[in-house]
Length: 76
Image 1 (cartoon, rainbow, N blue to C red):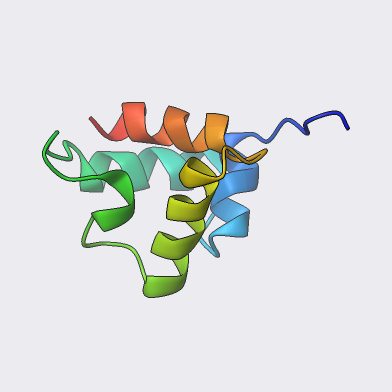
Image 2 (cartoon, rainbow, N blue to C red):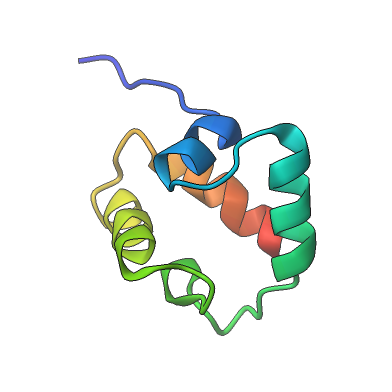
């Protein structure tokens, strides 16, 4: 089975957040820098459902894991 590529815009839509490039830039600007000691899924700005989605994407190495890693890097 071929892995599906997801963009940051797709991830933000999946998380129920505004997903325009401007929305994403504003989100990253307002939540950066995330301390290295805080796992992305444990960041205080997620809802429980969003945090669980991010945690599962990483733990299960799902189709979403690459773009979650991209968001993690952008927030650092």
